[in-house]
Amino acid sequence: EILSREVYLVSRLDAATTKGGASDGGGHSLALQEQASVGHMKAVCFVRPTEANVGSLVKELSDPRFSEYHLYFSGIVSPSLL
Image 1 (cartoon, rainbow, N blue to C red):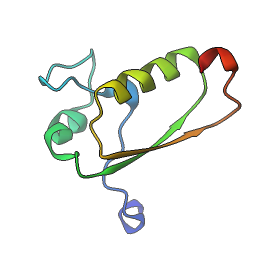
Image 2 (image 1 turned 30 degrees about the vertical axis):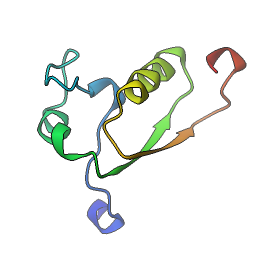
Image 3 (image 1 turned 180 degrees about the vertical axis):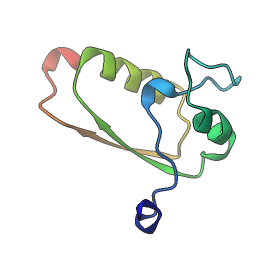
Image 4 (image 1 turned 120 degrees about the vertical axis):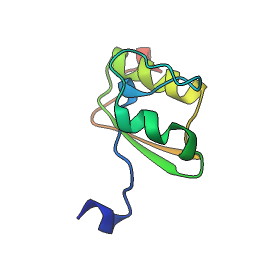
């Protein structure tokens, strides 16, 4: 059913890998396999606005894997996180 919505990859921000292929510790095997081939895809990030999650988001955006990012938060983002 998820493919009918044109969703082709589901991954966690904390499972992202570096471009060299090394895992950040416990990396998702699908993320490792798809690392080189997702540059043409768009990402939708649904994030709980916590310090750890925003940190993972900042890390991802500093070395982006996808062509576009659409960010959604599950609650109000405090000014200290911006």
